[in-house]
Length: 134
Length: 464
Image (cartoon, rainbow over all chains, first blue to last red; front, side, top):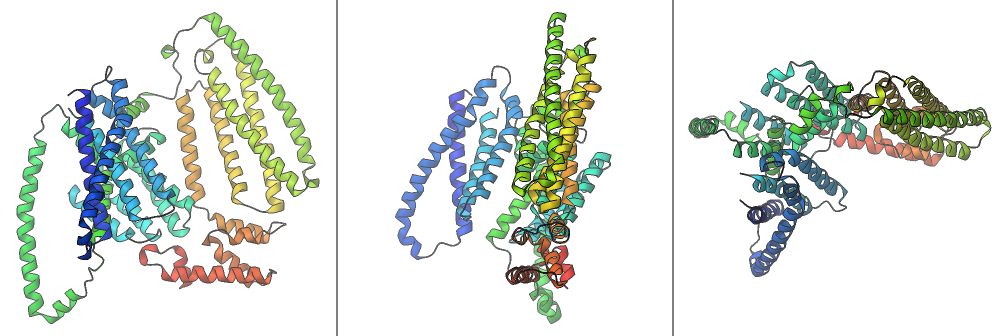
């Protein structure tokens, strides 16, 4: 698999994961859908489409900025598995610390913010696994 | 077995922490973690280091129960990472344990999944596990169905049994609770499968504490001679400078009693800032010159003696700053900042002593990191056993020359009983301060009474 294929495949998977995780966590946290909510279905659908586009752009940029540099720097010396073992632990620790720091420093503790942070962390971690797999 | 323990631990986690603040639950979580790890990894718990770290972890859990504060919670959290790290690899330095522990706790499951996906060996364990899982399902599902049928039958046939069943309250189970339990399962799945950061762990395991001459890059004798000269002149000059500074500093200390509060405060702060820069620079310069061949150079005796003298003079600088700080505390009472200065001085002194050992016994930089990380961890753990709020309050109320009651009132609830005892003894305080102490006491007691069993702390036992 070449680099562009890796980027495309990982970004696509990351987008699907992020959309699924964020929406399911929010639905679980904010409870049942009321009958009256069905009237707003077109707005919800439009919001879903727009948010999905934004998420996919963010995922693509995140993969290029936070994973590809490690790959580019080390691919001449190590194979993808070795690159993963060398850098993934620190990446995971740093992203965990940043996400936890954000969660603790938010003035408004709303479930949707926490859900967003959980989604960011889990998506970034799983993206590494997809990007560096055989 | 491991899955059952993970599931039990996850449910315990959820029962302990779901919509609860910290208290007895953290101690119980500590015990659960140690027991789960010991059951799943019996061979690793026999190791002395692991036992020692587990005991420390348990003690910090007890400390949280006896005096809940940010310090005790941080000490408990760091001990937790240390224990998990020790279960992944117990021969490494303590800071590698921390990193391994944190790494295991956050993404162990993902790393293991990646390893399985990318393994070159086609293992039969995966298919075996799937077969086991299917056979377990074949046993579990019919058992659950039959048990449920019998429960329904018995409850219809026996009113007492039916009454007993109706008393079981499962109303707390909702989506949020399930999500939280899922988080607990993820956490325990990570903890019970501790992993290590291989490059860092292997480097640490293969690096000893001694500097080995044959592993150093070769250098010419001329370079070494020049470096020795430069180092000797530089450290000699720094020695003269620090002696001058210390003489003027001790003259200042002798006049300390005649200084105003603002002047002493300025002096203590200046002294500490000077000390921070001086000691960090001193250690950096020493490490730079003693990084390689200069340790083994035959004509380095002068340089070594000057370095040791400089370390001793830096220690004297720490002592002079300690005297100023203690004088300040005697006059104006204890505060967290002043205690912080004492802790910093303690760490600085230990840093200087380990640098002295490094120079004297030809140790490497890793020796310094290992020793100082262990010392910092020990100080953190030991200091977490002390109820600082109560000590600050008692010292300031009964010994210090000046009482800053506003400061004491703004401390955590750990000093509430000390303040209440002070006014109950009939000591003189203003009416407003007495009211504020009474209010703080009443609020704390009512908060203690509202605590659920998970949030209980040692003070709950004293009010009943």
